[in-house]
Image (cartoon, rainbow, N blue to C red):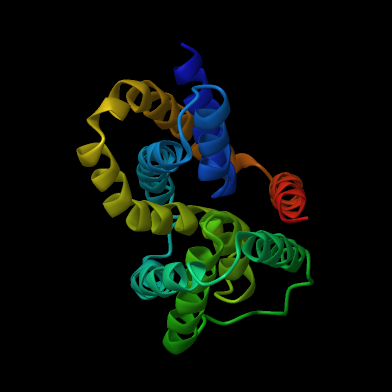
Amino acid sequence: MVAFLTGLAMGLVFAVLGAGGGIIAVPVLLVLFKLPLSAATGGGLAIVFAAAVTAAMGHARAKRVDWRVVLLFGPASMLGAVLGAKLNALVPERVTSALFAVVLLLATASLFRKKREAPGAAPKVVLVLVGLALGVLTGLLGVGGGFLMVPALVGLAQLPLHRAVGTSTALIAMSSLTGATTTLVQNTALIPLVLPIAAGAVVGALLGVPLSGKLPEKPVRAAFAALAVTVAAGMAWRAF
């Protein structure tokens, strides 16, 4: 029951904000269920995938997923993540933690900039380059795909916030598929724990998708900012 309720809360937050799945799942698996870091990271990825697929399907039915962005942004960000992961091995953990805190705060602040009048659709090359850059940052910093993705989709891909949240869930479902599958195949002992958490995350995502569409943008931005600042503070503490 504890595992299910934990997943429920995570799925709800993820569906409403388009971010926060791994940030919640990994610490819970570490602290509450006493898993080692490697198992917590892999198990968290599997839980995030379950929540992301469910949320993406709901947002897609509500027409809050921009498939043009997904097709251009997704593969580029996945390639960038591979490059970023290679860079990660060369950079000290304290540096990546501090950099993540700075990038997250800047990305969150961009959500509150005044919108330009009548923004047009971003050119294809811009989406590809932004996806590549975001993937490099995500791979380099190790966490935060959704936290960086939503501000990028709003500020650079020119999507409204609710549409950016929906598109983010589809992109995260795409990027987490391989890692989630690999984790569960290689470590089947995780399945009895991951399954009830993932089931809760699915229910939470089902509840969160319609809620996301009904909430005004200001509360969603404020909730995203509050969670992002909390995460940034934790990463800064870890660095310094």
